Length: 54
Image: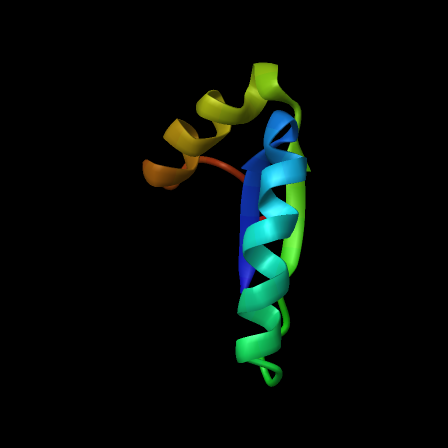
């Protein structure tokens, strides 16, 4: 599972991902922190199929 998050959400993200991983040990969770200034633009582009797959 690839998870994108705004860089400012890093602290909260840990509290969500840690129990999820414990409950789903067979899943690999890759977290990518995106700089806040780029986050919403990247989401909009990706939803339209125009962003890279990273």
